[in-house]
Length: 368
Image (cartoon, rainbow, N blue to C red; front, side, top):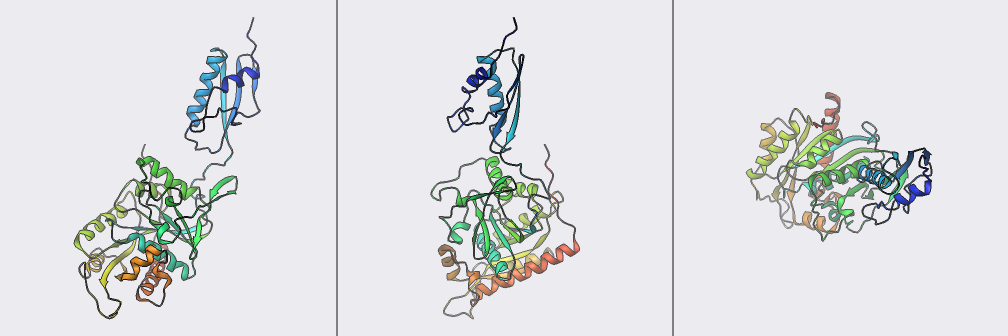
């Protein structure tokens, strides 16, 4: 006599399958949709996941099949469909439909003040009347939350077009996101490269950035997996290279320029920024002391036929303002504040020139 299978037998078997991380079974978590069909030895039903990118999707489907074979019958033909409560992340060009220009602020070497430049550039662009977003792409050493005085910020999510999207925190007229909002500042982020890249993709594609004139990317120093993820995920309009005048920093800046100029990457260089160009004592604003060499970035820009976008002096207040969460670009009556405002205006000019003379950047293909 042919075996008769009942829905309760299937559900009892599925109760032995637990979702990793929660300790609860798939029936208890209401992941088994009420669409079960049984025809002889053929059983079909759907599993519901929060997101189409759930890392346990494939393994859970196999575990459910194995449980039915173990607790019901090995002869059962199992068909499991998967559904998602959240719509899938869109591909380009729909990924960031409201973003006009994506600017990577980069440096070959750490410690040259790249994040300081990125934060102040974003604020200065907002002060010029532009809609600006700033993404802290340094997954292992995020510094933007401290610079904006938002270390305790807790972004929330909202439902947009069938997707739960992170809402960036807004301050000084800039929409900001950083992995630092989601991890403890006292704990090291010990992730493999793939985990860091996936986190970065979420901050880009699973966030509600809305309409932006400029989307500033504060990239980590060097040339790493993070940079490769960026150019494979979004079309970067252009890169701004930050360096100090000293030779060791300039050598690494050349590597950063070469990375973006590589024919497989093809991201235009908008220009160079010389940070810590000179030191000016607060008591003697007309004096200049060249602590790290003189005009090094200026000469590099001339050599590589790139614009020098700005020279940012060293003043005691720039460090204090970054630590206190009040960036210098807010102080337009200071030399440093004016320097960042001029930098922003030159970046706008170069972006307009680049968009007029060159085709849009395309993302880098992924070789499997």
